Structure formats: structure tokens, C-alpha cells
Length: 64
Image (cartoon, rainbow, N blue to C red; front, side, top):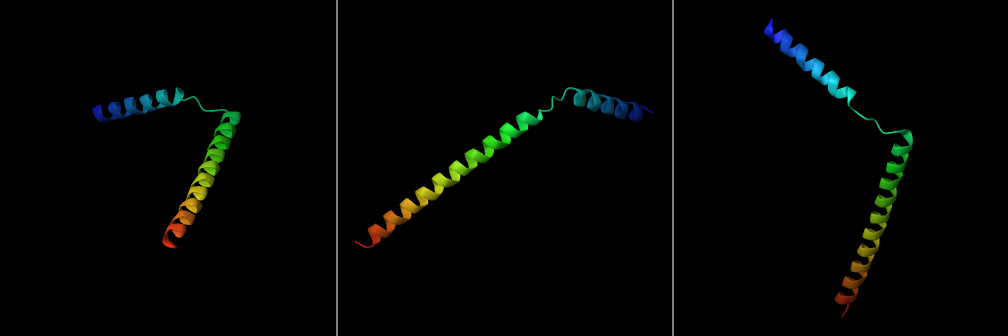
């Protein structure tokens, strides 16, 4: 019988915690997703440029 009451108390606690959740608005999700995509594209472009520069530099050094 005591197990049932502990489990019931656990479920009551879970339900109380779910009530405290503040879900983001649709506008917030769109802004955050846009920011992540933009930063990812910028980082990818920077890595591509650096890769090209290092490759060109190493090719130059190996031809000396």
C-alpha cells in the first residue's frame, strides 16, 4: 500500500513540474532557428575559406 502512495506522490510531483514549464512562442522559435541557421552557414563558410587558404599555402610550400 505504501508503494502505491509513493508512486502517486511521484506522479503528482511530475504533474506539478509540468505545470511550471514555460513553452516558447512561435515567434521565439522562428527567431532562434533563424539565428542557428545563419550562424551555422557563416561558420561553414569561414571553415571553407580557411580550408582553401591552407590548401593553397601548402601547395605553394610544396612546390618550392
